[in-house]
Image 1 (cartoon, rainbow, N blue to C red):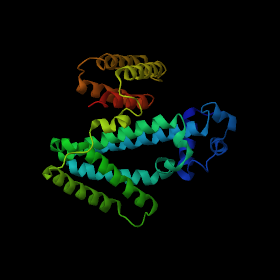
Image 2: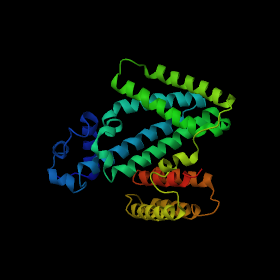
Image 3: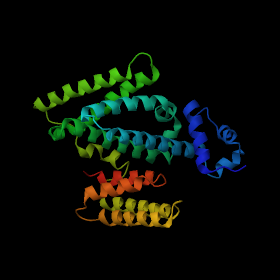
Image 4: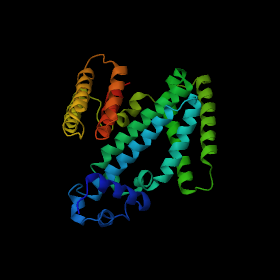
Length: 295
């Protein structure tokens, strides 16, 4: 019996979700797929590589759900923010063995997982930044990165209690509590004479997930990423006409991103169009992070 790479990933995601990284073996995944253990290694060199793919897929699925919330009609920015906090708690509870417990595992040091973790962290930081700006407006800009840092710390702490003490906290009440305290904090910061502590540079390592902030290295990274995207585009399982449209959008992005003053609205729309292709999703996310890491 032969199975596809996606079927192996599906089995791995199910078992990692149920048991976690350490108790799940390649043999378990092979048996769940109904194939020999060696067949799994045809697609993935190690359990760490397989877990990294599952970790990436889980975060992509999470952000898909977050995007759906932003398009939900009738919600104010504050109501959207509240629902996003609840969604985060609920989703991370469901996938705690994949999205929470990895911090205590040796996989943290795995060469494939490390840059992936930086990428995810950078994406979350940018998302939190956008949420705070949307709710509290441009007036918080001087304190924006301090607010991002405080908000992330609050989320992390309450997420721990929700994941491991599920009966002690209500998701909805916890989210409302966090939002209320953020509002108080924002008012205090705007009225305070204290200078902000953190600036964009403080987060640069996460926003470009480990790259030094030099134009040469940034350009080198873009070159490699564009080469990978082109390879993916050439092998997409879609019709010739659709593939041609995707390549045209890709070439536009490739040209626009290297301009002295690129059109960010057009880039954003183009990236969103490519991101709808699941085979390109992870690469587009990396590209978006590197493009917007200097905003």
